[in-house]
Image (cartoon, rainbow, N blue to C red; front, side, top):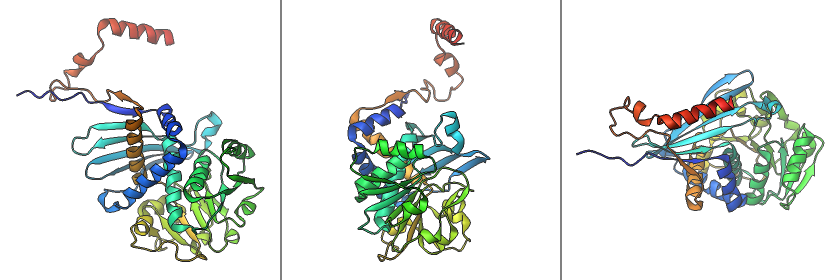
Length: 364
């Protein structure tokens, strides 16, 4: 009996497709949906085969691979971090991701993850804040007003009710951009002349800077009782934002400790410095915030589970809205044992090959 498998098709979401989903659903709804998807997956933390991401580092940046799987789905994200890219008109962070079936290995979904990562990171920040910030928090300092900042601001506004954001960036043009983008949101935006001014009297402090350096953007003298620090920018070796004494004076929470020890604010601390993985708080195994005076830190570096959730969520949105296109990423076999035969079977017919050659020559 001869098997005639269905053609293998991979659904693809381009940046334009993701932007279409964000516009048609609205960013507030998308942030809530992403938040709920990530939360649901953290509640089944034990179902996942996990490891720290693999990074190739250079003096100017890093390229990383972030894999994870449960018993049915395997995903990975390929992402870079190059702070100097803005000199070339390129984003500092670019990413794409793949979702494959565990039982066959078929890649069913391929998506841009540059826009999507900004949404998932903001949703993850809000998820952590729900557990670690004071429930009555209404003011946030946002240090670093670049590419990620708009999404962070909107996530905290829509998901936690933050209505005042105090802004600071060493580049005033970044703050100009952020203010322009959020002009119609109803958030009260206050420009500040320094980090210290922005942080003063803030309930929540989000740091999302880009420079690959061991910085001390937040120092102990800025810390007030009850603050929650959402430290997002320190996400690779040699890159931090908080003075070590800020960590020593706080309760620190992380996504996946083996990865955060290498890449997060924790790289400054001794191996026995105590932290709590956030999934334990979300599952009720460990305490998060316990009183109004407690200082808490979420040492956020980004973890593959969040990309797993993001890919599943965006695939679901694409299916519901009819967005995206199918790609013939994997060859279809007449005989699965005859890979060599595909050379002739899949080659362009002579007429199309000549047309392609003429087109290539014209481009040259």
